[in-house]
Amino acid sequence: MNTDREIGQRIRAVRKENQLSQEKMAEILGIHSTTHYQNIEYGKSKVTTNQLQILYDKFNASPNYILLGKVEGKQEYVYDFVRLPADEKIKIYLEITKSAFKVQQEYDINVRKKK
Image (cartoon, rainbow, N blue to C red):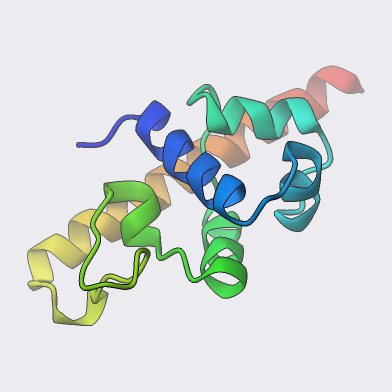
């Protein structure tokens, strides 16, 4: 199992490879606070499924690479999710879903605190 810190390090690697500042990467991912983005890189906050989708769409960094560190072939971020056994697909899906719900709950709590 990959830690949140390892996930953050892979997101940081994608950012660095594309020569982006933390501010610009936060903007691309739809994060309104650079501090929140930094917390993702440091493993203190979790990446959402929407952010995983953006990383894939914009940088070809697959969720399997970001969450699990799995790399296949010469393309650095490509991993063939379709060919995985069903139990591994379910495990990845559950990990992504769990992460997304935790981030949403944290967001809801922060919004309530600000009211």
